[in-house]
Length: 550
Image 1: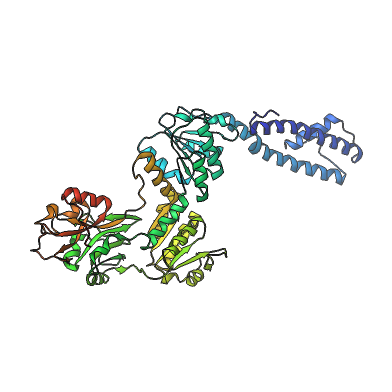
Image 2: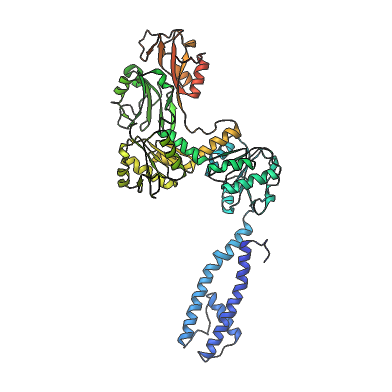
């Protein structure tokens, strides 16, 4: 049979050949049975007529009486065979044939690639990047080898080319004019794609998303511009979120000395802080602490001014004298920062999280259903017995590194119910499921698509298009145009998004200011905020970073 005939056409040809054969076989058997068992001879054409009537369930007419039990059994089997063929023919043979005739054909050659980004194989790791390309109107094409997935992407409005580079290398014709290539298959297929693209004459950048870090060097050798392992980067990001030793919550805070600290408070719904504005609460005036911002729904929002509302269920980030922070504990529950870090799931991501935490000196307890080296508690994280053996209520954080998003959502709800005050960090495969993790109770959730999207968008678009999280910093600033102004009444927060938390004067550090206090030209201000808000502060108040004391 010619190779160019489609699968559904081959099925239909087999059907057309097998039906006459079935009629002839059953007709012959019926003729022989009528002659030797019923002693009522029938000719071949009569036998074939009976077989056709039986297989199509249209009836027998006058020839519907049999006396031999063996003949009756044969007729019964033939009747059931007819029913089976009727129900099988249409969905298996006929409908696929007509669907293939009428559905649109997938393109099997690349379009004009000038200015376009080509993705080789679609997956969760490129979801976020495709969204960013659509946002900034950068055209792209997906080269997909799985037909069902290619049709699904086409229905979503993506420009798709269906083809297998291993069987038809000509599908890459024209790739040399593409803006960039991103390969997202398994590591062996990635290497083949990179080599074939270079052989085709493509001179530009090729970014590969690898599964195994050991394959980075070989891929670079065969022509990749850069090779990334999103799963390992995701593990590092989750570990950094769980441990302040890996990435300090507020970089530079140690410069303030022992008088000033930072605390995280979870704001429960029955807390007197929940739902109220900073202007109403007067946190600086009444409690002597500065609210830097709050984590809510996985995003950090800097406190923008007195109208900023404190969200119930959010995590408030505050800076102030230790005594004042202790007072605020009466209004909101402190986040427990002592104890081991629990890692549930010991796959690729879980291993990386546990490895980084242990290298940082954190006490880590790993939960997994399979007993193997590195697993401390064998069991199901959905069971309270497993959580008790892992001492989850004593932990400083729980990292859910489960490979299945549905299991991750349910595990988040179970752990949140078991330990309501526990910081809960979760990995996700597909970015659309991040919202479900937050709804189930996660404090921070991150998908491999977000990680890969951030990396690739930085290179392809020249910007941090997908922010994983905003890091807080505390920087020493010169007085600038703040000289002569009150640190808390110059609308610093409203104008820049940053906040002045302390002033250093004559080797003394002040964290509370009376009404007559004014910034001197030689004072050093400690300003807390994100990198963006600190840059804004430097511009607005014409300040310059101050050298740290020796």
